[in-house]
Amino acid sequence: MNSEEYIKIFKDSGALLDGHFILTSGRHSSSYFQCAKLLQYPKYLELFSKNIADHFKENEIDLVVSPAIGGIVLGTEVGRLLRKRTVFAERVDGEMKLRRGFEIKTNEKILIVEDVITTGGSVKEVMRLVQSFGADIIGVGVIVDRSSGSVVLHENQLSLAALEVKSYDSSDVPSELASIPVQKPGSRSLVK
Image (tube, rainbow, N blue to C red; front, side, top):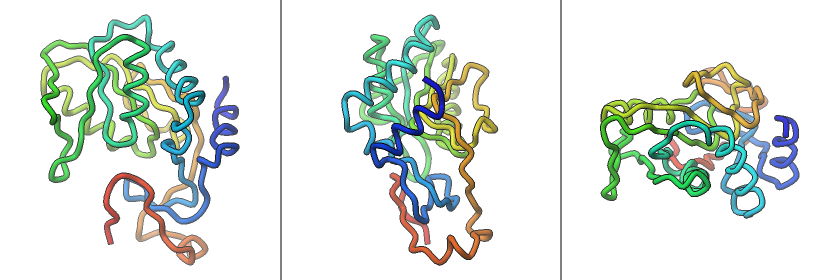
């Protein structure tokens, strides 16, 4: 499948939203990829997860790590397909941490899986966390890269769909977007 076919699935399933959104990165956009809405359907979860798992199946992987909340479902399914242990990192007081008894061991080979990246901020935080344990990152897999390839997180990075979707700093929101009520569908709290 190519990028356009993946984007068509988002559109057809109603998971590509139009409006005025504040993204996890804090930037404003007129489009939002609601992966949770898409991945509720087993056929799409299977399709996206299998294509990510197939890309990395020849790599030596010990553990799949995802940022909460968006990457959890996808990362768990990718881990299941690869038959690898899977954990997630979550924010505690604004910082990515491992909780719930999860652990990363020194020299483990880690695949990081996320649903959508715009600036790659959440993945970068997880990468720093993984490296703090002395583990090795072997790759990063995502469904949608909203930067159309301009955000490079790792030399072994897979984005199933790449699309440049304009986003704006809060001080630079165009008037036509600013006139639409703001929505914050992501997992971080809305900052006013």
